[in-house]
Image 1 (cartoon, rainbow, N blue to C red):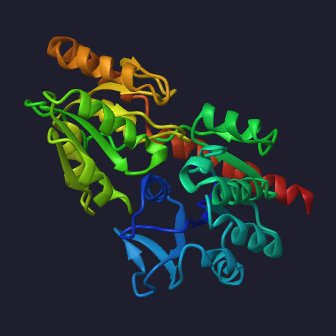
Image 2 (cartoon, rainbow, N blue to C red):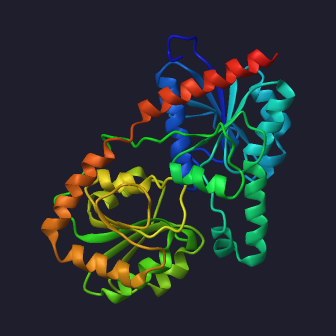
Image 3 (cartoon, helix red, strand yellow):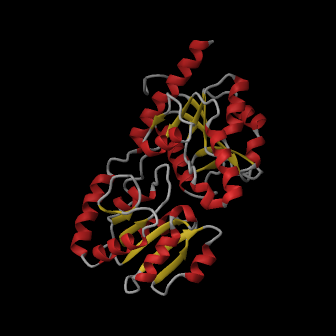
Length: 356
């Protein structure tokens, strides 16, 4: 069940879509759209934002001028946009409920894409009261009656099952990265952290390690409400840089890094890690993904500091690890992802038709 069948009409629903950007989720949905189009499917993205923006790089969009939170109430509009679709594919968080409700009204299959799943880490991110509310909302959304839910990694699916929102038919489809964009600069001259500057990503540990290793240059390329606060307390050996809407800035930061420090507390995948690997970085991380470097425990400042010191003081070892990581990163392939995704779409379409 691949491209030998007719082209599908697919409605992807996500709370943001470029040129609006808040993190890796937008990249994932963009690449799914682009690669589904490349094999002949008709794909439209429903999202929030300026309605006058009707496409992005050739990808058609329908945008509602509301906040991402108000998207939860937009099931009627999503239903209008989904009338001609064969399948609706909705992503965490705020696109899920209105898509399931629209799909139920139309009798169309709905695929749930799990781009975020944080569990108890919500309590650290939002505090004990708000964190419990967000954790409860997450469980409620992921417990909705999707035809199938798709996770990006085995550890994401394992966490879903642990918190009681995993279903027998849920699957793992491993995403790709944009091979051909990444490169390793000749001068690799710092330890890099890039991402949203929040507790989930482990930014405090990054700052603590930099403070202990003041002779080692660090570069932080980040975004988020905490940027000014982080910049104010960073030690002098840290080059702070606000991430702008520029893929080139991001790729350049990865290319010039000798070590990528990624002490995340929870991820559904963490695409930045294989992107750093493809850019020729040795890695120090908590991530369960395969990499060459040093795996550390969450919150272990001593272990992270020792790992960065050992790698920084041995450039030849860093270079060997970097080459190995570039080889590992080759396995992440968007064409393979969408070929499997296409099979999922047909399976849920056929299953829905068989029940009629």
